[in-house]
Length: 635
Image 1: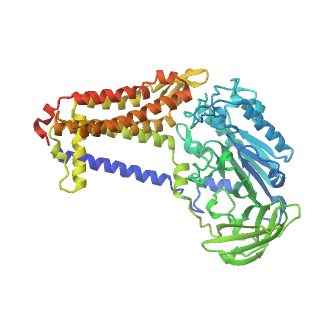
Image 2: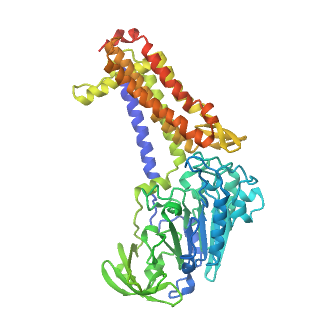
Image 3: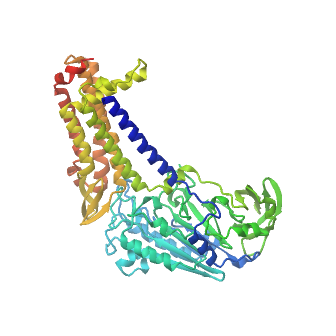
């Protein structure tokens, strides 16, 4: 009967996990096929006035997305219409790299850099805050809110309500209107790092963002930009992607390249818009040039020092097709079009398609970066093809750029990892993973505690794996069956889940309380975000090892009674010592260096763990095992 119940439980859990995994992978599938748009998509497409005329310099423009300061070498040559800076205008870190504060000198450097840029370009400058720019900033009126003093957009803000809102800029061109909507999702108030990693939106901000979206109606294209990827913005319900569904792209940069692990973090949402993360300027000096050619959007991400900057605008890269573009223009076009920005004269532009020479592109105007070459798209009507551009400049430097394209709408898929990072709701995922870990931990320990004869759960066989699993079933059963260890283990996990972790100066002059489910600062509640991942870390690096240590200790005593040899004691005390040293290291370094010594003195979770560990081991040494072994036997 007991075994049948175990089987039923495993089946139910398996079905639940199967449904969850299926839903998870379904959420990562863009599910977009050309021609399968909704009625709303078709209405939006038909309402836009797209030009089909070619060989017109006037029907193309470009913008630049950067992080902070580069001007003289690039802006003077690229000459964009708009410059977007999507946050982290300053670094705002203390020398230790753990603490954070607003440093006015950094803001003055940024302001001077912008002034220098204006000397080389008349582009509209749109800058907004990132989480680094909100470290230690309580509200709009804070004396260290240097964004309102030294940034371009921030200095135009007059009221707190403006500070908490997004903004829209409409670029009026002879051939159409293009809207750029910036959204500030930084937490308010802005704690010091590390608990300032997620963005937040409340109902008031959502309503304002909806009004910005409504104001962009009728534009040829709308580009949204913000600091945080949508996967890291906490709002309930998560409607931001749906609000942006009529846009061609959302540009962001908080995660950058994940320390070069994901150099091309791009994806397309089910709602249609692209999400394009930009690598960081501080460490990698990466910037983006985005072009709109007859309303077909193309872009390239380049590193400082790279020349020339090349964008093939027609035929565009089929990995970045959007239902909001006139993709049918590719099939009816007669010219390959390439933007080439260079600090020296371009001597030759050779174009190949599928390794076959197509011809040599020519510059349309000596003062314009556009190059063209006649082509016949009918020859490439089916499937995906590759276009390559070989450029030689006056210094005899060679550059090769290639991309895939299609005429029939075939698309290249995005890599799995970028889709996972950008399309997943990371806040919900962290909350779910933490909750499941706690739930299954409590379920396993409580279920094991119900058995009086644990050997009924043993696996059959004499192979090493079977013996190893059975040995740990016994150890975990002992930890669960012993009253003292069970209540210590369950109690510590419940405290991790519901209790306050610490009290500290989350801002330099504001005390707050941190829980796994949120942060309280000066009467303001910030929902948990990165706290769930800290909770997962604490669970895996303290609660699980503590469980294994207590189970091993009790099992060693079960086997050898009070006649423990030095080797037996060392097998217990060495893991205890390592865990204690690691825990003390975290206690002394992380939270105190970020939030002051108050977080050390009033830190029941981390500081309390250094006391809980030796106390738990001492209690396990003194636990009476006779009543546990009466049925199961000593071996």
